[in-house]
Length: 260
Image 1 (cartoon, helix red, strand yellow):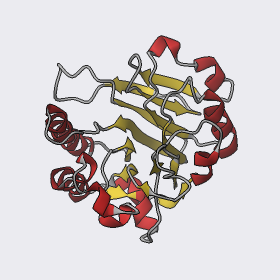
Image 2 (tube, helix red, strand yellow; image 1 turned 90 degrees about the vertical axis):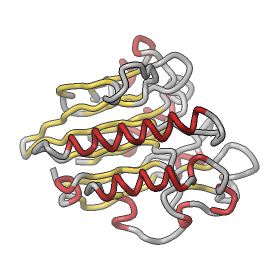
Image 3 (cartoon, one colour; image 1 turned 120 degrees about the horizontal axis):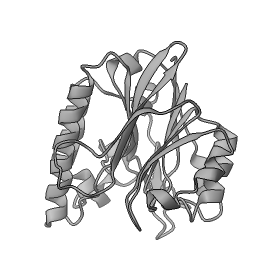
Image 4 (tube, one colour; image 1 turned 30 degrees about the vertical axis):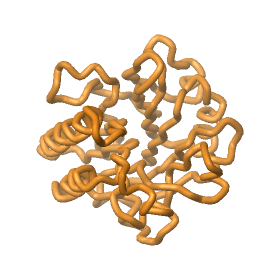
């Protein structure tokens, strides 16, 4: 089973790229972030024609997450538990079953948190605390768990081409990174780093200042695997070439192959 994550940065603006990638990569499950669309406006038919079931948690103009799967999406849950007043569409999870077992998949879009000296950073940290609580609760299930998405966290200095340029950014603050480490301490494995410890592993390049052309990237899109999923990890791929497509997203897809 191939599970992929991609911050599409506007599904309607990048529908051609999405369908091209789905045909090319053919993941069994695709977790999308920043669909920037209400549920009713998501281009379901274009995706269903390629053999995918669709579940969305949308929001007009910004945020929004989706799950696309070749198999049925069961027990779909929208919204990260822990704050009934949070109206941001940043979390969707579901179970996907196969003949050999089932996996619980979440697509998440973690808050950016900038500027640090604002309520946005406090919201980011509170959201991460809720994520940790829910991630721990999911470990009580028998199913392997994959938490996939745009975490808006640069875990380590080697995850940025120029880490010194990010010291004042919410993505690289000690508090953000500590909570990301806490997820690992719960038992969740960073799939990409589990198979490749080298540098130059980036998933995001800004549109400005020639970041893509200069390979000035950062790694902020992660597949975090519960122990049950980590034991089944076979390989990880980054579809870096999609950043060079016409009208690209500033993120690229990351996928993990699991023996499920």
